[in-house]
Image: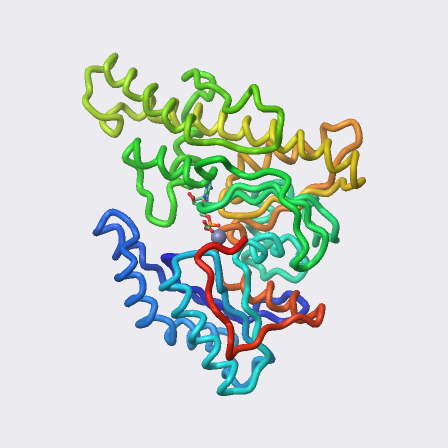
Length: 360
Ligand code: KG4
Ligand code: ZN
C-alpha cells in the first residue's frame, strides 16, 4: 500500500508496460506508514504512474480495452485514490471496469503464461534453478499465499472461487520477516524479507534454538507471534553474553545466526502446515498442484524447500511459483487479474464500485 503501481498487460500475458512510484522514503522518515501522507502521495503520483506505464507500452489510454483497479483489502484512503481514478477513466473513455481483489491478483500470477514473460523475467527464473517446474496453473490447485498482510493456504477452484484451508491466528510470515529485520537493525524499506534472506546466507540455521510454532495443533493454521517473541528473547540473551545493549549492535556473525535460525524455523512451520494441507486436499479432491505466491515467495530458500516438499512426496506434486519480481506487489498482477475476470465474462460497474479495507 505504500507503492503506486500501474501496468498494461495483453490478454495473452505479455506485459507491455509497467511503472512504479515508491513512497518508502517518505514513510521511513516517520517510522511507518502514515495514512494521511500515503493518501497525498497517491493523489500526486497516480496520474504520473499511469502515464509512464502507457508510455512504456507506447500506447495512449484510448488504446486499452479495459481498466482494472485494486479495491481491497488495504488502506482505505489509498485504495480510494486508485479506485476513483480507475472509475473516472473507465467512465470517461467508456471502458469495461474490473474491481480487483489484491489476494486473488497474487494467486492469479501463478496462471500467467510463463513463456510470455519478458527477457528480464526469464533471467530471474533461470537464476533460482527451479524454472522447469514453472508453468501456468490450471484450476483446481492449492495455493500458499505468503505476503506482508496475509498468510493463507487456499483451495483455488476457479476465478472468484476459493476455499480457505488455513490462515494465520496472528502475524503473517512477511510480518515476521519485517519484525526480525527491524529487531536486527536491517533496512526495511520495501519489507525486511530480502535483508533477512541475504544475512541468513552467512549464518548457521541450527545455531539458535527456536521453537516450531503450534506443534500441538494438528491443523493447517499458522502463528508467527510466538516465534517473533522467541527471536527477541534469544537475541537479548546473546546481547547479554556479548555485553552489548541492543540486538542491532551485535557482531555480524551473531546477527547472521539469528537471521538464519529464524528463517529456518519460520519455513519449517510452513512445511509442516502446508504438508498437512497437501495431504488433505490430495485425499479429498485429488489436487496435486501447488502455487506459491505473495512477497515471501520471492525468497530463494523458501522456493528451494517447497520444491523439495513437492518432489519428495510418495506421489510427487507439481509446484508453480512466479518469478521473484512477480511475487511481490507490482502493477501487472492487478492488470492480469482483470484480464482473467474479463475472460470469464465477469466485470463490475464503474459507477458503483466501492473499496474494502477488509475484503474476505
Ligand atoms: O506481497 P507483498 O509485496 O505485499 C503485500 O501484499 O503484503 O509482500 C511483502 C512482504 C514483506 O513482508 C516482505 O518482507 C516480504 O514480502 N518479502 C520477503 C522477501 N521479499 C519480500 N520475505 C522473505 N524473503 C524475501 N526475499
Ligand atoms: Zn501484496
